Image 1 (spheres, one colour):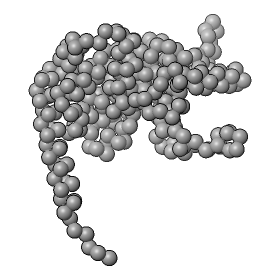
Image 2 (cartoon, rainbow, N blue to C red):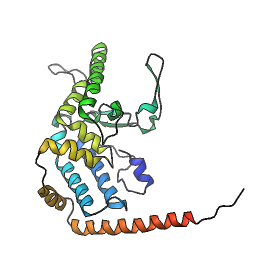
Image 3 (spheres, rainbow, N blue to C red):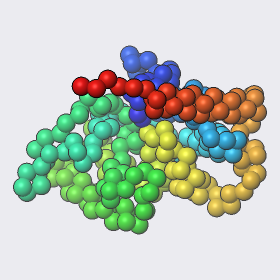
Image 4 (tube, rainbow, N blue to C red):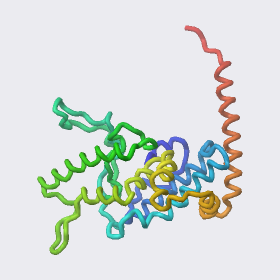
Length: 259
């Protein structure tokens, strides 16, 4: 979740930095609340009534679907250290493609194990334009390497107990891909990409019949005064557009001293 960017835009996250989560559901609920706050507090968050309802419907459904995408036996962890800003620019390799250095580690945090996923940028596509078939080819290649490394090191997420099968990261990641948890977690981490990911990859898992009834019903379960809220967002957007035009008009006529 790009919390630092939202904080820079004065959008309240309501997630204290010294707070520790002990359940997956409480963590996910608070992340969704951050998405709610972005819609509430960002003046240009919604372009029109349809856009606002489009977003509210997705946020409402995301909250309802939590139990379907996160396993009951992992609801209390484990939580694992995750490099949330791991991208092509932050990975240094040698001439044999061995990783020699990682940078920008300050964005690392502990997240639920089911939120550990293959990087969405494996095929050089942003979250809104991932071609599933193309991505899955590279994903399978990555998972094959991970499984080989797990066998070499006999590594597991949890210690092996008598009579119990050890929990492997590769198995958790494979299950997350099969059930759609991959898309749900990816949506949680992207304030602007959540809506496209929901309607393109999450909603179809529930029903292929996406009708107007969904948008006519779901918004009313987001908050009690949703109609008043939507009208307020139209006022916010109009005010934002006026202030933006004024800012550019002032800048265009501003004279700069010559040097």
